[in-house]
Picture 1 (tube, rainbow, N blue to C red):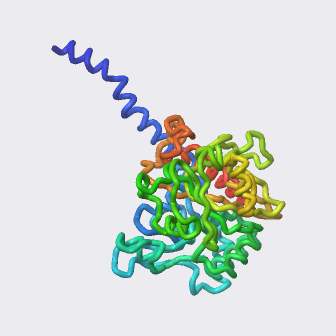
Picture 2 (cartoon, rainbow, N blue to C red):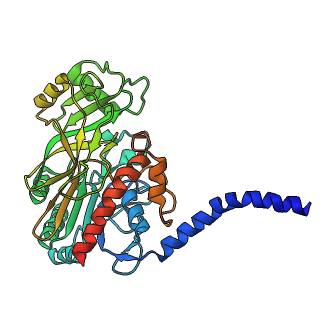
Picture 3 (tube, one colour):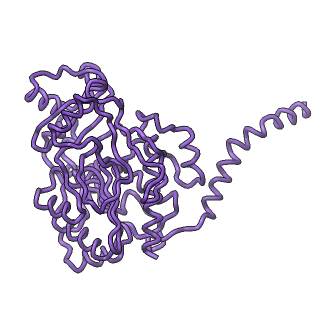
Length: 389
């Protein structure tokens, strides 16, 4: 019996090693990996629950790569940002931002920071906390860029810091004068158009298409007689257009393309599908395009784009290096993370998951995180640290 038990345990040894030995080794390698110091100031005005969805991806990367604040503490996604803090009470939550701070206090924040990251300014609405109230029609609780935010961005530019902003930084409810200031400081111009991919446009099949989108389309096109995969483009002024797969464009899902050999030196996959919200931005000539969107329009789709005043390709991620600092803009909800990535404190996890989550697996948002966002933000954090030192 003893010999049989020994033989049985010997057979199980490789499984025990795989299940327990490798994770333990991975964790201990992470523990001895050198810590890095980087002061990052995050602004997120769209936090509706404790998933911290709009900035969760950024904080996972900071923790995994062992970036610490100047105080020596690791970053915590539930407290180390400026914006809205939900509390589950009738007042929905509280805000902690730059409101009421003096020019000198904002200057000190800009000076102390190495990287400033604006993840989202859309805000929170009563409908976010009450399913009976549609978000598009409910009252705003908090949101939109303010003059103090513009002061921070201006001072960060003057101090030569690294600035990153992404989709929904300047759209509604940010006032147009504030938006214009942002565009001037960042060297960008929003066309007013945003877009999103849907696997199925038939509203009897896909119940996730917003009612306000359907109503707006019906007002301009009489009926929502759409089906199959497609893109919906919406302009700030209310215009709305549908692009149908194969009729108007040929890449089923919008592709983010990155040239293998590029001037900016980023190492990213050449092609990654992106099935989420994006905006169409115009950029000044001193910007370099890291990646761009390609929907591969048909001749009919290309004419539609021209009629809408849009180019054949749209910037996805861009950068310009100034005399001292750098400015980045992501034309998509890149840091938005849905679902749980698990612990960030295991060495080699990104490489492991990139093997499981192939880039073409676009329905799973984690695929985009592992294949595109994590490599991109890792390289930006590394650049920010070099500039800080």
